[in-house]
Image (cartoon, rainbow, N blue to C red):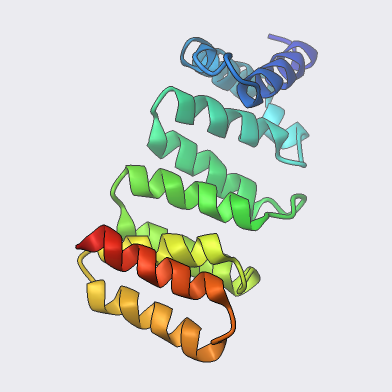
Amino acid sequence: MSNTLAKSVINDVSSMLTGNGFRTIANDIGDVIHDSIEEGNELAENPDGSSRQALTQAYFQSKEYEMAAKYQQEVISNPYYSASAYDYDRLGNYYSLLKDYESVLNTMNTGLDVYPDSIFLVEKKVDALFNSGDKDGAVEVLKDLINSNPSNPQYYIVLGTQIVNRE
Protein backbone atom coordinates (compact mmCIF):
# COMPACT_ATOMS: atom_id res chain seq x y z
CA MET A 1 0.00 0.00 0.00
CA SER A 2 1.45 3.39 -0.90
CA ASN A 3 2.16 6.00 1.74
CA THR A 4 -0.36 8.34 0.14
CA LEU A 5 -3.07 5.69 0.25
CA ALA A 6 -2.12 4.78 3.83
CA LYS A 7 -2.40 8.43 4.88
CA SER A 8 -5.75 8.67 3.15
CA VAL A 9 -7.05 5.57 4.94
CA ILE A 10 -5.79 6.86 8.28
CA ASN A 11 -7.41 10.26 7.80
CA ASP A 12 -10.69 8.70 6.69
CA VAL A 13 -10.73 6.29 9.59
CA SER A 14 -9.83 9.00 12.10
CA SER A 15 -12.75 11.08 10.86
CA MET A 16 -15.14 8.14 11.00
CA LEU A 17 -14.04 6.98 14.43
CA THR A 18 -14.73 10.35 15.93
CA GLY A 19 -18.24 10.48 14.47
CA ASN A 20 -21.30 8.76 15.84
CA GLY A 21 -22.47 5.56 14.20
CA PHE A 22 -19.23 4.59 12.51
CA ARG A 23 -17.34 3.13 15.46
CA THR A 24 -18.02 -0.51 14.57
CA ILE A 25 -15.90 -0.31 11.44
CA ALA A 26 -12.75 -0.21 13.56
CA ASN A 27 -12.93 -3.95 14.07
CA ASP A 28 -12.67 -4.58 10.33
CA ILE A 29 -10.12 -1.97 9.42
CA GLY A 30 -7.78 -1.84 12.42
CA ASP A 31 -5.50 -4.45 10.90
CA VAL A 32 -5.58 -2.75 7.50
CA ILE A 33 -4.49 0.52 9.09
CA HIS A 34 -1.76 -1.18 11.08
CA ASP A 35 -0.42 -3.05 8.04
CA SER A 36 -0.48 0.03 5.82
CA ILE A 37 1.36 2.07 8.40
CA GLU A 38 3.98 -0.58 9.07
CA GLU A 39 4.54 -1.28 5.37
CA GLY A 40 4.66 2.38 4.44
CA ASN A 41 6.69 3.40 7.48
CA GLU A 42 3.93 5.91 8.14
CA LEU A 43 4.84 6.27 11.81
CA ALA A 44 8.26 7.64 10.95
CA GLU A 45 6.81 10.03 8.38
CA ASN A 46 4.04 11.31 10.63
CA PRO A 47 5.69 13.25 13.44
CA ASP A 48 2.50 14.89 14.76
CA GLY A 49 1.11 11.58 15.96
CA SER A 50 -2.13 11.36 13.95
CA SER A 51 -1.22 7.86 12.75
CA ARG A 52 -0.71 6.71 16.32
CA GLN A 53 -3.98 8.33 17.37
CA ALA A 54 -5.83 6.52 14.58
CA LEU A 55 -4.26 3.23 15.63
CA THR A 56 -5.12 3.87 19.26
CA GLN A 57 -8.77 4.46 18.38
CA ALA A 58 -8.95 1.46 16.07
CA TYR A 59 -7.39 -0.90 18.63
CA PHE A 60 -9.65 0.45 21.38
CA GLN A 61 -12.75 -0.08 19.26
CA SER A 62 -11.67 -3.64 18.50
CA LYS A 63 -11.07 -4.20 22.25
CA GLU A 64 -7.34 -4.74 21.83
CA TYR A 65 -6.53 -2.63 24.87
CA GLU A 66 -2.85 -3.58 25.13
CA MET A 67 -2.22 -2.31 21.61
CA ALA A 68 -4.35 0.77 22.27
CA ALA A 69 -2.24 1.49 25.35
CA LYS A 70 0.98 0.95 23.40
CA TYR A 71 0.07 3.49 20.73
CA GLN A 72 -1.45 5.94 23.21
CA GLN A 73 1.83 5.86 25.13
CA GLU A 74 3.61 6.67 21.85
CA VAL A 75 1.22 9.59 21.31
CA ILE A 76 2.05 10.98 24.75
CA SER A 77 5.80 10.51 24.39
CA ASN A 78 5.95 11.94 20.85
CA PRO A 79 8.21 15.03 20.99
CA TYR A 80 6.27 16.63 18.12
CA TYR A 81 2.96 16.40 19.95
CA SER A 82 1.85 18.29 23.02
CA ALA A 83 -0.03 15.73 25.11
CA SER A 84 -3.13 16.99 26.89
CA ALA A 85 -4.60 15.84 30.19
CA TYR A 86 -7.14 13.93 28.10
CA ASP A 87 -4.31 11.94 26.50
CA TYR A 88 -3.13 10.82 29.93
CA ASP A 89 -6.71 10.07 30.94
CA ARG A 90 -7.24 7.98 27.79
CA LEU A 91 -4.09 5.95 28.51
CA GLY A 92 -5.29 5.45 32.07
CA ASN A 93 -8.61 4.18 30.71
CA TYR A 94 -6.84 1.53 28.63
CA TYR A 95 -4.79 0.40 31.62
CA SER A 96 -7.96 0.31 33.74
CA LEU A 97 -9.62 -1.93 31.18
CA LEU A 98 -6.60 -4.22 31.51
CA LYS A 99 -6.89 -3.99 35.33
CA ASP A 100 -3.28 -2.78 35.41
CA TYR A 101 -3.77 -0.32 38.27
CA GLU A 102 -0.05 0.22 38.83
CA SER A 103 0.25 1.54 35.27
CA VAL A 104 -2.86 3.67 35.81
CA LEU A 105 -1.26 5.21 38.89
CA ASN A 106 2.05 5.82 37.09
CA THR A 107 0.23 7.43 34.16
CA MET A 108 -1.94 9.61 36.41
CA ASN A 109 1.07 10.71 38.45
CA THR A 110 2.92 11.66 35.26
CA GLY A 111 -0.16 13.47 33.95
CA LEU A 112 -0.64 15.29 37.25
CA ASP A 113 2.98 16.44 37.14
CA VAL A 114 2.11 18.23 33.90
CA TYR A 115 -1.54 19.10 34.71
CA PRO A 116 -1.73 19.38 38.53
CA ASP A 117 -5.22 20.92 38.50
CA SER A 118 -6.84 18.22 36.35
CA ILE A 119 -9.73 16.91 38.39
CA PHE A 120 -10.39 13.94 36.10
CA LEU A 121 -6.77 12.78 36.41
CA VAL A 122 -7.11 13.01 40.20
CA GLU A 123 -10.38 11.10 40.03
CA LYS A 124 -8.84 8.34 37.89
CA LYS A 125 -5.89 8.12 40.29
CA VAL A 126 -8.27 7.75 43.22
CA ASP A 127 -10.28 5.12 41.32
CA ALA A 128 -7.08 3.16 40.65
CA LEU A 129 -6.12 3.32 44.31
CA PHE A 130 -9.56 2.09 45.35
CA ASN A 131 -9.57 -0.64 42.69
CA SER A 132 -6.14 -1.85 43.72
CA GLY A 133 -7.36 -2.17 47.31
CA ASP A 134 -5.66 0.93 48.71
CA LYS A 135 -8.81 2.63 50.00
CA ASP A 136 -6.91 4.51 52.70
CA GLY A 137 -4.46 5.85 50.12
CA ALA A 138 -7.32 7.02 47.92
CA VAL A 139 -9.02 8.90 50.74
CA GLU A 140 -5.66 10.33 51.83
CA VAL A 141 -5.01 11.73 48.31
CA LEU A 142 -8.38 13.46 48.38
CA LYS A 143 -7.92 14.79 51.91
CA ASP A 144 -4.51 16.20 50.94
CA LEU A 145 -6.08 17.93 47.94
CA ILE A 146 -8.86 19.36 50.08
CA ASN A 147 -6.34 20.60 52.64
CA SER A 148 -4.23 22.19 49.91
CA ASN A 149 -7.21 23.95 48.34
CA PRO A 150 -10.27 23.87 50.60
CA SER A 151 -12.19 26.27 48.35
CA ASN A 152 -12.23 23.84 45.39
CA PRO A 153 -15.68 22.20 45.48
CA GLN A 154 -14.67 19.59 42.90
CA TYR A 155 -12.44 17.85 45.44
CA TYR A 156 -15.37 17.47 47.84
CA ILE A 157 -17.54 16.12 45.03
CA VAL A 158 -14.92 13.52 44.08
CA LEU A 159 -14.46 12.51 47.73
CA GLY A 160 -18.21 12.17 48.26
CA THR A 161 -18.65 10.25 45.00
CA GLN A 162 -15.87 7.85 45.90
CA ILE A 163 -17.29 7.20 49.37
CA VAL A 164 -20.80 6.61 48.03
CA ASN A 165 -19.56 4.34 45.22
CA ARG A 166 -17.51 2.23 47.61
CA GLU A 167 -20.22 1.57 50.19
